[in-house]
Image 1 (tube, rainbow, N blue to C red):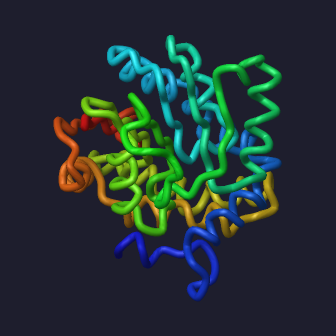
Image 2: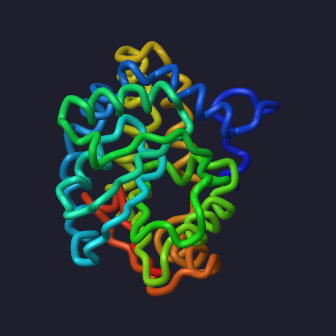
Length: 242
């Protein structure tokens, strides 16, 4: 199955519109749901992202699909001069803005509503681009990768954190059972929107992973793509340079 065939709701409606509506609908419960469903492991995953990125000392960072801004806020630990936290879902950005202001980081982090496949930024604007659990939700993720390449500076860093299917068969079986049968029910209880989380396992299973995704990243012009599985391969960091 190709990712383009995985639709959250209506097959007749563009995927990016559906994803925007889906995240707007669950925005008020997104943070608590994310913590419960991941058992808090997402904090560790963000920590690993910062560890991978800090060696490159980026000054200007674009955090795409920022959601409620958690990775952008974590990126403020780096000696960055400016972080743009961008997302297509305006209600998610509203929550991100409140969190950023509460932490007094609004002098470093700027909120922008952006379509990841048609970025408004000039060429070679950023030292680093990050995107966590968002690339598989693009209507055309290859077009999105092309836009990321365009707005990165020469030698800039692309860091993608995404769900993956564990390579270990036992781990994969447990993961699939939780994703397909347990997670949607818990999410329904917490958010009232079971469909949004029914979509999640299908979108992960259909998305290219590990070496296959690195090859796609390289095909868009990037170099030195490598991947780092986390927590038994439940999630993976991809790192590449322009």
